[in-house]
Image 1 (cartoon, rainbow, N blue to C red):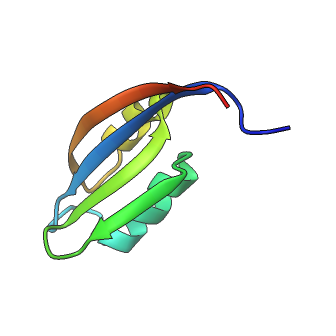
Image 2: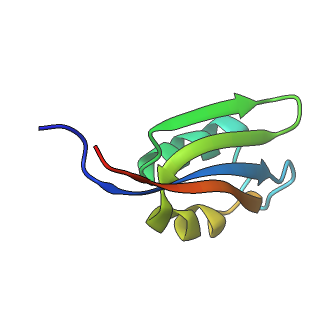
Length: 80
């Protein structure tokens, strides 16, 4: 059966430590997974997440409360 074919993006997500909703780093990481990420790495020291997610979900993550900046590092087509 395999994984579906789709465009994927590797992104770095900078989290605002003082966001209005007081979303913590782990809360935002969980929300990124809910948005479709297949991997999320947490860098607590720098308040940054690194994630692999469908390219179509990047705009969802960018709009999340507590996310200051999203940088797309690489986008690629996953064939299988």
